[in-house]
Length: 402
Image 1 (tube, rainbow, N blue to C red):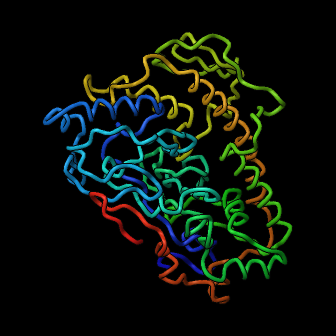
Image 2 (spheres, helix red, strand yellow):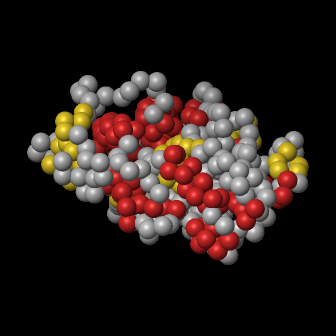
Image 3 (spheres, rainbow, N blue to C red):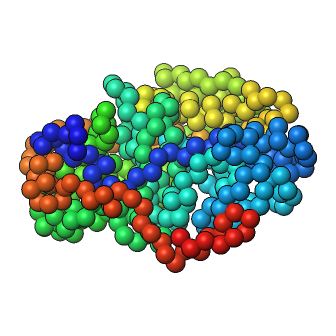
C-alpha cells in the first residue's frame, strides 16, 4: 500500500476492495430529472433519419449510430444498430446523479459511452453502493455517501470518486469485504460484523484524504456500537427508506408558501426568515440554514440540485437536451421539500459525528491488520466476481454467458 504508514487508519479501498470508476455517459440527453422528457427525446431520435438522426444522437469515438454493443445486464434495451432502431424507448430507471440527486436514465447500452456493466450486473434488491466523493482539500461534507439505486459516481466538484458495491454478486451475495476482515473484527469486538454494519461505521466516521477515504476502525465494542448506530441513522436518511416522510428537527416541515413559477431561473436564500426563494416568486419555508449550506466536496447540494433542473433551459435549440418540461413539475417541488428535510437532519448529526471522531480508545491500524493477515488485499478481491450462470444478450441479439 504505497503512501500508507503502518500507524494510519486503513483506507476504505483496503476494506471494501472491489470498486468501479464513475460512468462516462458521453452525451447528456439520455439522463435527466424527468422521465417523460427522456421518452420524448427517444421518440425524436428514432423519428429522425440519416444525418438528422446522427446530429441528434451526438456520436463520439465510443458510440455512433452503428456501434454494436451488448445489452446492459438486467435491462431490455436493444442491441441492434441505432441507425435501424424504430422501437419504443426502454423504460427509464432511477440513478443517482451526484450527491442526493436521483434522476432518470434510459438504460440502453448504445447510448452510454462507458456504462460499467459490472455495476448493472450486481444492482438490485439488497444491494447498496458506497460512493466515495472526490477529495477537495479543506472542503466540507461527507467523504462517502450511500445509495440503493445505481450511482453514476459523479462528484459535484468534478473530481472522480469510486463506486464500491456492498456485495460482489447479484442477489446481495458475497460481501465486498477484504477476506478475513469481518471475522477479525467480529473476534475483536465480540459480536458479528457484517458488510452493512461496516458500511454504517464508514458513513459515521470516514474522513477524506488525498489517498482516499480513511476509516478509523476501533477495537472498543462500545465505540463500534455508537458508530454503527449513528451510521444506520445516516444510512436511512441517505436512502430515504424509513417509510415515513421525514420531519425537520423539532418536528417542523417545509411548505410551499407561495407557488413556484412555471420556469424558475434563480434560487436565493434568506437566512433570517429561513426562506428559500425559487425564481423570485416561489417561496418555501422553513428552510434551516444548515440545509441550505450543506455541502459535498465544497459544493452546496441544494444549489447543485436546482441547477440540474434548470440547465436544459440553456440547451441548444433543436437538440434533444432542449426537450424538457414546459413548466416546473409538481414532483420536483416534492423532491425539493424532501431534500431540504434530509439535509437538515443530516446536518443535525454532524456534531455527533465529530464527537465520535474525537473519542479516545484503541484503534485498529494498518499495521495491526497486516499482523492479523487481513492485509495486504489479495488481487482477486479487487476484481469483479465471475457470474457464470448469467445470460446476457450480446451485440445484434447474440447471447453470452458471463
